[in-house]
View 1: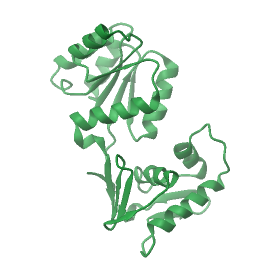
View 2: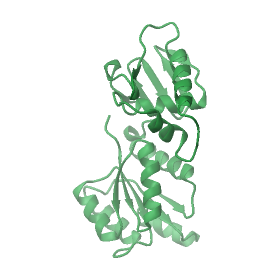
View 3: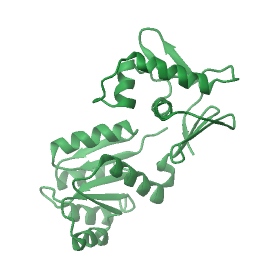
Length: 236
């Protein structure tokens, strides 16, 4: 499953770091540019699937970058979300008229940004939205927060849902307990690593009820993985 690529064009280092961390957690591949000229160069060399574009960039403004991206054959249809501290209606209209698909005013919540990003990609490039993913006989619908196995509904708690979502994005990859804590619970949550074992146990119990095949592999001394022999993840 190819990861959608997001170009983050932003000159504020702390915000770039925050965006990269959250986007990569959601399964995106992230490219960076700290000024307008670099944004155009990166987009030319490696056309992204979506651009998060700051309005107030050095060298070239976000508005000018947006205009030039829209004038190029290889990037004219790439979704663009403008990030800006300029909240006036006239600025919003100018950004949208230039070709931006959405407009988010700083400061913004990361939850809202990710939701808007998914909405833009679903609207313009449905194949990249990845709201429904299948691996083997497991189907996960992120938008509806629903999991089915062999056509039967599987009822997961919020944490088990996030845990399965994290594993299903990387079939075959072994995650340590610490990595799963960071990826599912977040780096700022301080809980015992054995909590991971408890939730893996709950996830297995529900997924494997009445079935022989266990898609979750335990790697002694290393962690857990969604067995890649079980199947390849595919976006629906």
